[in-house]
Length: 249
Image (cartoon, helix red, strand yellow):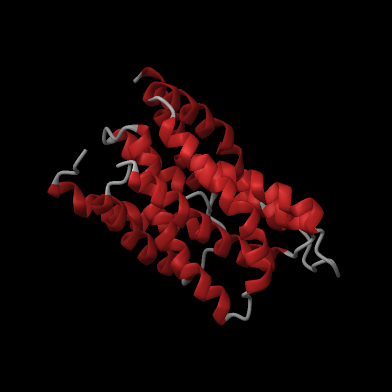
């Protein structure tokens, strides 16, 4: 599928909105994935295309954390060693599923992971890390998150934080830094798999990604730290409508 030229500015604006929402409220992919589905993208292609935006977004996120003194290359590498092979497996499973089966699974997953839009990590996560990271608990969880991220990606950030903080013992800030770095790495692997299978629209992905970067920059500089409840409900409605569209074909 090739996007018509007149949709390019629309996708750019979509990326700005998604990047802003992702910064102030979380869950920006719940805006981009349904929109691509509404445009008529097959779920395989939409799933692969949003990987471009995730990679571009996290390419901005990693140096942002590093400039703030929160970059942990050793811990990122260890976590990535568990997550990347699992993400590769998840992406391979996704691209080899039949379109009809993946359509149904993606519709169900969209609904299941909607709950992550309403989870506030700051309400239940620790502010100080444990003296020793509990790798024996964290690594299997990182592998599970990697598989899911390779397979579908939407909402992968929240289970990663759960694995890092509740499993490994990181504080919220360092967990977010490791999350951005590891998701960047395994998203690159998944993107390669989807691209090799022809499931990436590069023009749409890069256009949304550039807008996403701008939107994230604007969101980070806004006075809004958490988006109002109606923002999440808009994304919920979009995700539910996308799930319905996927199920009815």
